[in-house]
Length: 92
Image (cartoon, rainbow, N blue to C red; front, side):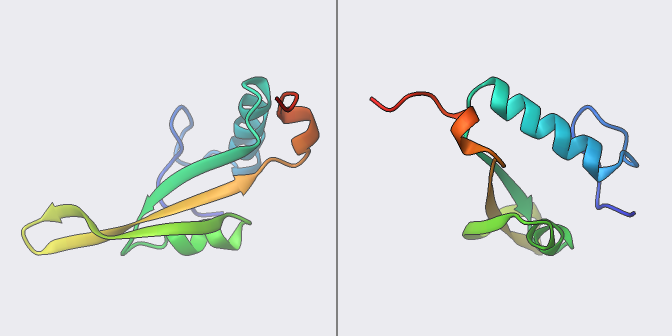
């Protein structure tokens, strides 16, 4: 498998399943029901995340200026945790 870059704390060639498992375990530990991330447009990252079950919930056109002639969109994604009932606290 090839990915565009690595996740923080993992080598660039870390298996996707390892990264996902740690993200889901951490989210459950802090009782989060949803994971959120942003990705730079103009790369394969937005399509990569969408193909793996992440939902694009927003886009900020021209948010990232990487150089004088290199302006990119920022894409915002979210993903529900598998068993939300275990990851959220009681309703108030």
